[in-house]
Image (cartoon, rainbow, N blue to C red; front, side, top):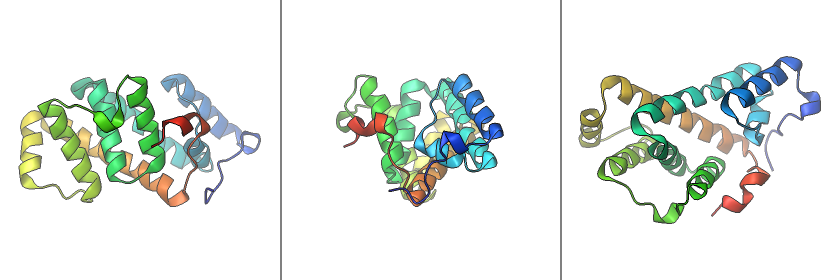
Length: 174
């Protein structure tokens, strides 16, 4: 049971409904339990939905699969059931088994980086950071770290408020 219920559409102010419409149109996304909860504050909704901009940006230099796997790894490291299930769906829908993922050497490095960010509260061993810094330029490292931070913020939001896992995700859980 969530600590704060998602805002029912019938109670959603027009400005938030407009933000929902813009979001769903731009990203072909749905309004999930998390987003409807964020809808209680237009500012919070807008800030959290900027996650999509960084997600699209990191895909340009690491690729689609590494991007969703990186987000999955951060979510697992943050122990967020909702976000982990969301990315499990993407992994499964792309024909893979989350418990049997295979990574290239660079993908493994990226997964180690994402996991370390989440599990070590951002304290990354110098050796791991040096490897990432050799693989990506400074702008890309900043974007990866910022994306991981936004992913962790999303994980925290859902964990603190105990946001219910959406019905469409229920068959994708562990």
